Amino acid sequence: DIQMTQSPSSLSASIGDRVTITCRASQGVGSWLAWYQQKPDKAPKSLIYAASSLQSGVPSRFSGSGSGTDFTLTISSLQPEDFATYYCQQYNFYPLTFGGGTRVEIK
Amino acid sequence: EVQLVESGGGLVQPGGSLRLSCAASGFTFSRYWMSWVRQAPGKGLEWVANIKQDGSEQFYVDSVKGRFTISRDNAKNSLYLHMNSLKPDDTAVYYCARADSMVTTRNFGYWGQGTLVTVSS
Image 1 (tube, rainbow over the protein chains, first blue to last red):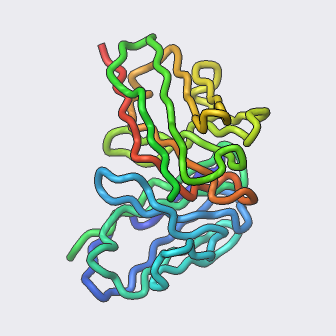
Image 2 (image 1 turned 120 degrees about the horizontal axis):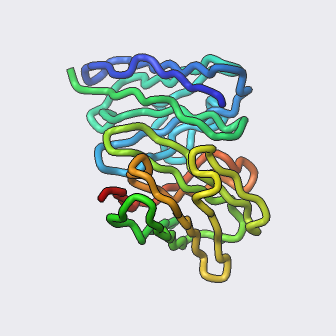
């Protein structure tokens, strides 16, 4: 199985900060990588697919990059509604696997 | 508007069975792969199973193979998860999720609100 490792597992940041979350795959997954945002007691929401393609309606402050084994989700200027947990997911191989999540908290 | 509404969760004893349902609307259900993804309390996301548009292919995570069966009824725009031999480790919120597109079938563009399954004596 492909292991997806996110770092950090949590971070504290202020409004307006630039935030970067890293996701590393245990073997190459090409660009078959998605990012999701989940707020407490809510369903996940798709942010990015194919490593760097923004879902329709997602603010442009979110961006993704990377390929192979190393990927990054960047929030260019953190907004109040961005405090949430973020998950990466590889979809190149079965079983489909998620990272452990990165919780973004208010500093 | 895409809507996915899960039902069927509840409390079940270890070794018991349960069937989850997901009612889909707002899109042509028969054109998309569908999945179940679960989340144990306070934990991360775990993909459980998915099924092809016509039901001819299904894939499962190893931990549920032989115990869970994913199925669909395209005439009823419905997805199901039949769960047998349930274990306490199966306790989770179960989400129904639609493939992002008809082309990229293994990431999730839309999610339901989830239904809680608790396996306990």
